[in-house]
Image 1 (cartoon, rainbow, N blue to C red):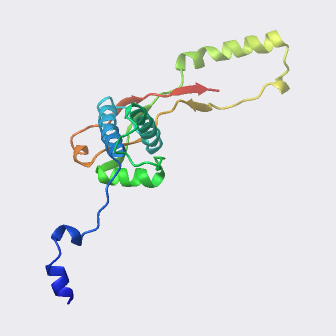
Image 2 (cartoon, rainbow, N blue to C red):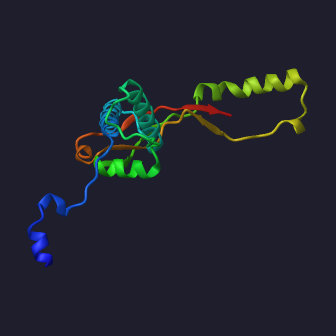
Length: 172
């Protein structure tokens, strides 16, 4: 009986499938193009940044699309971690570590600081007990991620090395 049912069934009905939101498909294509542009500009892209950009693209495309569109009504796109994982897998995107030098402290400022400190101590009438020693401490502001996503086939083609990983370092 089973063989008879299977033989009479079309091949396409033997596999489960579902339709995806057309708007989401276009959003994902736009995200892939955006990631490729960032790689060409040597700007690292984090998973969080991909999620934020996906939400931005989706909302923008949804606003420009007519209300009678083919997008799935009632479902709101959230760019969750699960979506990100599946998106990366669907588009064969690979996470790589970026190599390069980070910015160093300002050596010129370090050379003249002892004289400035002596002047500050003298002008403020501070005693030796009020002066403390501290080693260099860094506060990174607008630090770029040290990993990025690229297409797996680009792994061998694109050299992601950067001369310097740009970040704003405030030395305290």
